[in-house]
Image (tube, rainbow, N blue to C red; front, side, top):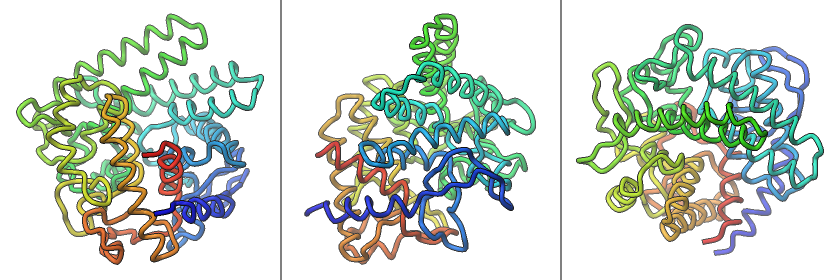
Length: 396
């Protein structure tokens, strides 16, 4: 199957997804630089703002294109939001300021730094220092917050997803997995394995940025924080009997038994041991790997779109990256191959890329049988485009 028609379509879509608004307008927050939205015309006006974790996965597809500068622009926009509000909201709307999203700001900065380095920007050192300053502010204020409006640090130095309204359903929206069979709808009671893996990866990356800036004391601080977090994660979230990682219910002090692709985030973040990675790959990857890619959870439920039978681009990318980093290149390539082929097959039938896919039944007509959740099924779609381009660039 040729992927060129899909890649051509994505290239033509990027200009349709670029927005710029430097001043506040109604609920829309003004941002200093242009950005990319998930879809050209959202359902009921949805998805017409810059989203936090979407922007990282969109950026993966912008490298080596005429739009690569947007990777830097979106990092600058995130820094501006931290400077103005002390946080990066779910999306750039005032009504999203009650919560954030999976905190990939530092990883956005790393992608942007590659672009600036390739362009030969002379301000890279000063820019990196400002980005690290903003990342530290976000980390301490939002993700290590112990009280309103950021009551996330709740148990043994680990954090939960949150919303200022103390509602589980809105905390699930901060997770990006809105909505899922994870956490039994009691998100405020859980320490999510994906979130705390991201925070570990942030702390390790901030140590690396401090080292690059020649700031050894800063480097030592963040290295120690990452190592401390890793020890607690290993204790609470690894289930030796099951051979996998699980979310942890901190109120009941037990691991939640519902398995999901969140259990592969420790491989992406790099804190899993080699033996833990081996067991996750050998015992669990075959359960999640379906004909069209990785299924999100092994359970299904009405209106739960981050669950069986759906697959989502960002999770395919996280799992494949984790597999590669632990030496499972063949398995990573198979994940990429199945996902790209699924997207291309549906594109042949519909002429579109989609927010999510049915990866269990790969009869192309089955994409209409995704669990649509409360938002429906959307064309466009920013992170699907970005991950598709990135996967094709890596090959199989």
